Length: 298
View 1 (cartoon, rainbow, N blue to C red):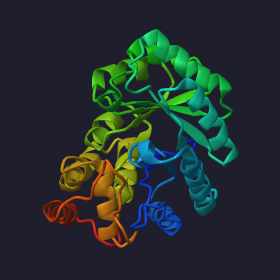
View 2: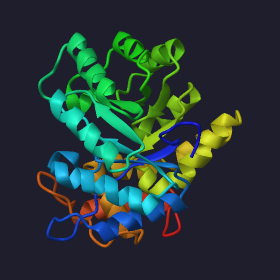
View 3: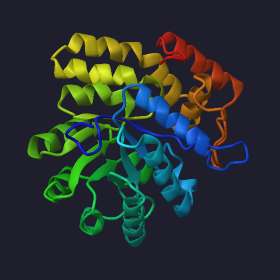
View 4: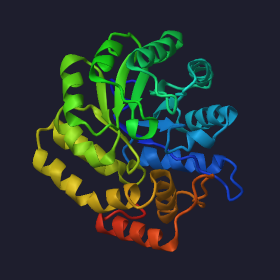
């Protein structure tokens, strides 16, 4: 682990499933071993890529337990507990803590579109009730509610709110918050990893990290060393696989397919409303993996 309670090279982990749609605990352990072997020091479970909207509360907590059991002290385990129901998020935060999580991921409420004062009160209520460090998740493309710059600056004053996973795509807003606070900043969109790191982000919470964890660890190390040429070369090398996973259909679908291609898991099963990609998407994926020079030993 690093000085961050969340880690630095983090993947938002898929939830492996058997062909009948049940959570595949064998697959969970296999993915954890793969992430440990490819440069990770942290993992997020029950995020969007983990298909959290279709997991029951019991399955979500079982995922925390399974990942923590497989990872031990090798990965910091951050549990997604966000909800558009504040009371439910507080309940899940407590259950995830008892299940062994090391940190909590709290997304802005989705669908009900609170005002910024409501978002501030919602997030503070969760952090007040929590016992673990909190990483905020800013992804208005899915939630419709961004964390405004002033809201993030205010939330940074809370003793348990330590980090932000930024998938907003607004680099200037990110710069302002990083300049005004000591929040640990994480790129939450692989397309922006290099840009965020170059302007001071601490790490990544990645989807493409399922297959490129080692490369992202090298990118972070290069930026730390002031070697932007090497970091940029890694960024350019990964363009094909980032496009394949993140723009072909949907990240969870393509990440599972990629793990099957690498022999990490056996099935790419997803739950409705997701469906597995067609053959042409698999061809795009294979081409992207090949072009980025990612194989069975990625």
